[in-house]
Image (cartoon, rainbow, N blue to C red):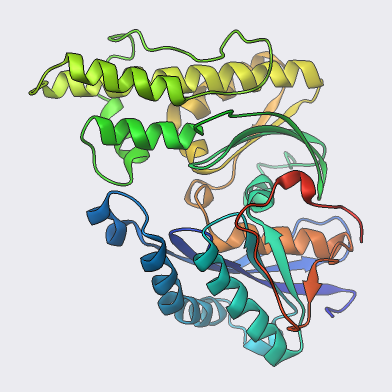
Amino acid sequence: MPSTATCTVLGIESSCDETGVALVRAEAGERTPVLLAQALHSQAAMHEAYGGVVPELASRDHIRRLLPLTRQVLADAALSRADIDLIAYTRGPGLAGALLVGAGAAVALGASLGRPALGVHHLEGHLLSPFLAEPAGDDRLSFPFLALLVSGGHTQLLTVRAVGDYELLGESIDDAAGEAFDKSAKLIGLGYPGGPALSRLAETGNPRAFAMPRPLLHSGDLDFSFAGLKTAVATQWRKLGADPSDQQRADLAASTQAAIVDVLTAKALSALERSGLKTLVVAGGVGANRPLRERLGVGASKLGARVFHPPLALCTDNGAMIAMAGALRWQRGLLDGSSAGLGFDVRPRWPLGEIAAVS
């Protein structure tokens, strides 16, 4: 097991189409762990020809990338394998084959070094990823806080009281926000990955050009629904005919983005008011969206609250967030899910509520 004074954590992320490896060093106590080095490979170019992630290709590419990336981060941090105290890997949720690649590498390395391997929940990694940001002066993130988790597969609002102590307040009952971005982009003929492409096109469009629905905006609860918005985009796209103009495409992209941002902002600010918390964390790939960041920043400020994000480059899946989650769990003595290379399993479907905060 790691020493009682410091812990160097190797983090491995392989849940979908990004292979991420990182090193984080933690000290005993409450001081925020420090990112030493990180490397990330995106498979977007490989999957672009198929219009989405092909699980078998994703798994094979993780196999090719993991060891070279591990060597790279060790070299960047001027460390050797012997300096690793703990290996944290994404146990789930995600694509089963992709998860098995990362888990297999982590447990094998742990067995060879005599070090524990810790299976980390992918969403916990996202929730704790803002701790990777450099604090502005004394403005440091601390518990408890409200979290808006927005990614391709998840849209959730949670109260985060401590590492491992999460209360779900609301979530999408169908499509996630990131999925709405991606599917809407595909409907209007944009490439893969669709979400960033739609956001770029929206910059030249009129967000009020089309009256798009805001599902569950006035539902009174904190749940989300984006499937109806996707249907509305498809209907409007058909109305534009076989050869819409570039401006019409940009207007539809802007109107779609505005609808998603309106709902996410309204629900997050409502949750802030209800909870009485004064800190909002925004994590996940959609958290990189500029209009969403601006709207949440302005709205939270009016409520006397602060907003924290992970570094822009670490909003999508990455190894740094997994290493950080492992380091924070080590600081708090929460390594009950670790093993010493004696076997492992992955959880392609793994509700965040099943994580226990007991050591």
